[in-house]
Image (cartoon, helix red, strand yellow):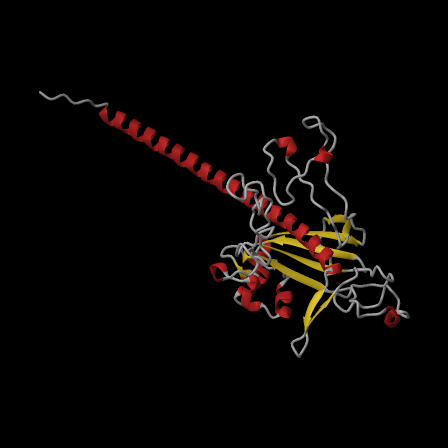
Amino acid sequence: MKRTSRHRPVRAGTVLIMVAGISALIASLALAFLVRMRSDIEESDHVVRMTQAHVMLAAACNYIQEASRLGWQQRQADGTIIRDEGFGWIDVRDGFMGPKAHRYTNAEIATRDPLTYPSPHFPIGTIARFPMYVMERPPFAIKQTVAANPIATSGATSGLPLATSCDPLPLVADLWDDGQQGLSGKDYVHGDQRPRPGSGNASWFRVHRDGPATFLVSCGCGGTEGFRSWSDVIAAGKAELFGGDPAFFQILQQQEVRLWYRVEWSAAVASNDYQNIQNDFMNNGGIDYYLWRAKNANQESSAKYKRSQPNSVNLVGTIRWVQRLLIEPSVW
């Protein structure tokens, strides 16, 4: 005779309630975990964007320094290339506003106000925009080879300091123009300046010259390529970069990080005999003056020896001060 229990439906309902409760708890924990993971990813992405924007400040300062004196290359109608050397944002020869090339003589500007004389290359009020990307191979790329001409320890050339290779070594070939790998010296000079896939639309900087030697630097990490607004895009004729869609540009603008700084260039340079020497400790009985390390690499494994002694020749001036601007400037 089979027995039945009037309490069996009650127990079944209890189990069903417990299973439903545990499932809801697991779902809640999973949702909380996913929300937390998304928050961590957003925070990490913000840190990366802030870091890239700060790197753009260094790039902008380098541009300001190099543009002051390295000069410009211009091609005339007949194909002749003219290379003009700059003499600083404030010309070191006469104190007038620059940068001016050597062909602009003092007699031509003797009667002009140094604060209002327009620079022929970058006058006050000019804005330069620089979207950044990684090149497939930048110009003048070199190999990370510490010793381009190592001294052999055996064989017929043992102990002989033979300089058989360029130092440093070009990345495209072991010699300047030996034709290896189908490349030549021109490939070394020009490089492969195509953007590396995935490196574009990442970071940018803008430089606005607001005084003879002061600049307003805007740094960003995002997809706007340094355009301030959609009207700025239209004025530059670059609407196709964003599919002609102002709403898409606004989304990119809201997602990116923007920082603003004001900097001043100085004509001060480092001495050509300045060395980064540390002589505050003894090393095997001798001070650091008697040691010499590679200029472009570090061969030391010990942490306290991780330094180099480069010949710090500086011909392009220095940055006198950098001021962080907490509020977006009216013009940048």
